[in-house]
Length: 443
Ligand SMILES: Cc1ncc(COP(=O)(O)O)c(C=O)c1O
Image (cartoon, rainbow, N blue to C red; front, side, top):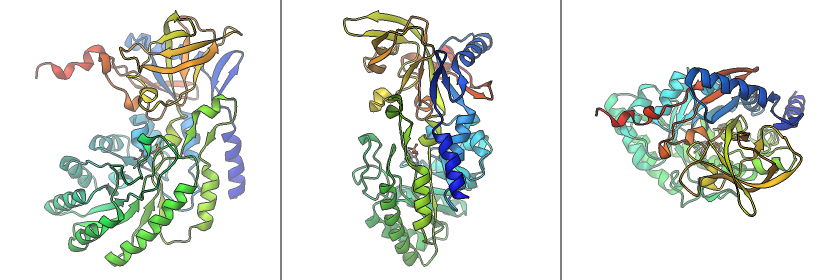
């Protein structure tokens, strides 16, 4: 059964994310010219809006979530809300029974509740939880606080004791395991701000042993993002198992689960060379994990990008083109306030013309309208000749895209649209110019 399942998943993996049919870009079966025309009309009619927007595909989102179904025996999954947090996206995640939420702030708890999740279905990570956020988490009986320092454990214990409730915690350990990824997204190395070092755990055991208001449910690590191979996860699993044995001995109590965090990667660049999408070998990893894991602890995960990145694109219009000696400078109506990843991490995103109208190619810099020279999506890329007024699609923009948007240059947050079976739904309306400064008035 597992083999049949893996084969059926494999055929889905090979499905093209982007392909041109009659020179029109199709995205996972959706004709982007037809859809964007409808979306443009709707946004103009309803909101008098003509700017860029994020477009999400429900079938892609469902297919990515389905990949986690059945293949990991007994695991639970907590979708990383921060990667793409729109409530309507979370409502879609809710349809998958094996999924809860991994939240990182009080407001993300509120988002989860609004989407229909209970506190029991949420784990709460983050190095700087405030007492207000801890109160909120306790009030909603969160599945677990993923604690990141001894001081935080003390603070949670103080608050749960004051409220006469029991807080469940999971220690996020810093395993000092390096992974081959961008330095900003390596989170499991000793020098990073995340996690508790194993040698500090004695203090945590002391607090838990001496208080009836706090209990340890699990141990967790998160190594980083964009991890492309299984090896670091197996290394981390060994590390967790060793520490779980120690914890059970120290506390004379069983631990419920070990969590390997998120970080399953996708290589957006490889895909543009006409090769199939290269991504973390999820099914192979699951199979191996099922074979080797005979330890008593359930193994949970917190995937984000693997689900959300392919599920969204950024749609923008070309405003102006300037010709320079070597390249054409294409100025779009979307910029780093809408998608900051290229400026922040030098992240690569595929840029595709929505419609190819020429066999000729030119070299282009694709830039935004913001007053910053770092405001670009790509430099020196070859694209079929572009005209002013054309649409450009920024691919794999679902994860850490809209959620990292800002109002820099007093640019409003752009709308988010969900496409399901060729129906379109505005799941975030465009912010207006006056929305931006409303908090600065009548204080
Ligand atoms: C604790 C934790 N879990 C899960 C994730 C999700 O990571 P990704 O989107 O790479 O899967 C993150 C992201 O930084 C994280 O910090």
